[in-house]
Amino acid sequence: MPPKNLDPSTSPLALFGAELRRLRERADLTQEQLGQRINYSDRLVGAVETATRKPRLDFARRADETLGAEGLLVRLWELVKGETFPTWFRVWPEEIEPHARMLRSWQPLIVDGLLQTEEYARELFKLHPGTTSERVEEQVTSRMDRQKILDRDEPPQLR
Image (cartoon, rainbow, N blue to C red; front, side, top):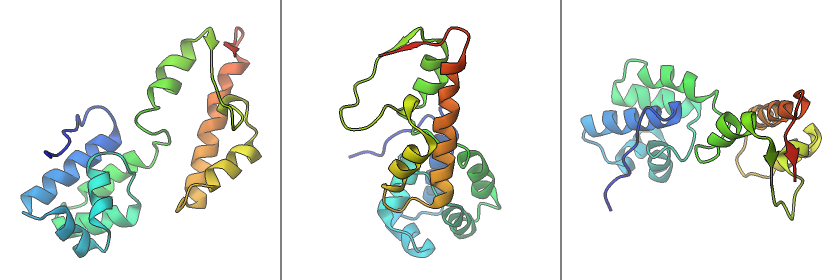
């Protein structure tokens, strides 16, 4: 299967992934070889390259050094670290919710994100394996920021 082509202009994570792949291919390394050299799995390398996983700073530093990127990946990581929403969801809080007059949601097992308390959201985010406490707090902050649309003069009706 051919590698997924990323449009680096879609997000900092896509830019990071595209640059990581470009640097890895320039070094004539496979994902597995790069993973071995930086002490991460080839699956993680692939997930970062396809913008489906956000890298940690340690990953960016090791890949940067191994690939001779002269700090490029670490600088790009600074952009990536601020992203809290997954790529598939980003359009919702950035383009849809701010202009909505009505929002419909079906959440049979959990309270909708716009109605969650900080404590409830924090406990949900802690359930994801491998999530750091720093990442949990980033996600909670983003979730609470989304709720500001309910404080507008004419908030959307939530169903």
